[in-house]
Amino acid sequence: MDAAVLEQILDETFDHAVVHHGYTNYMRDYEVILYMTAAPSTGIEPAYLRYLFRYCVEARCETSVSGETWQRSLDDRLIDHETGADLDGFVWGVKWHPMYPGAKLLPQSDATRHWSHTLGIDFHHVLIETNAHRLTLLFSDLQVTEVPVGYAPFVTD
Image 1 (cartoon, helix red, strand yellow):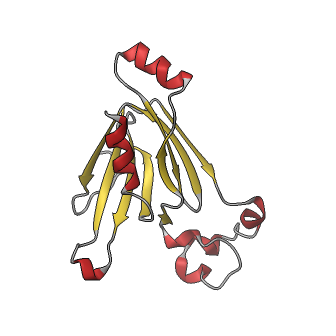
Image 2 (cartoon, helix red, strand yellow):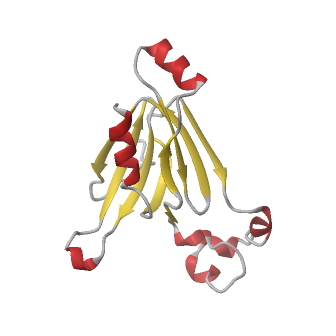
């Protein structure tokens, strides 16, 4: 995948809502599901898009919530929006994170060069930052598709 095209796709995710992320049920590719919205005046309908990071050989997820905030956010009532809305802490129950500061392509690294050489295809490193998580993905290709109605990424058939 061309780095310039990848950067353009990543730029389009800025400030939209991450509603799910994780490995697919077949455990090779990593997906990030975004709820994309635009100002009502544009006439663009909101949509759920699946960003499928193909051949993902490394996925790291770490918190971007401070330790102090975590300490105030351990109450299980915070995992439900209704019961957590008036509590002091991070309300996990909103069930989405804004893509802020967003996603960016990282420079080539020893790891990207290693996997490119080993598999004979290009690899990329991407950093995705939300208000609660920082994801680092090492992958080869990115596909973006609209999420079909009823899509459930955890279904194992």
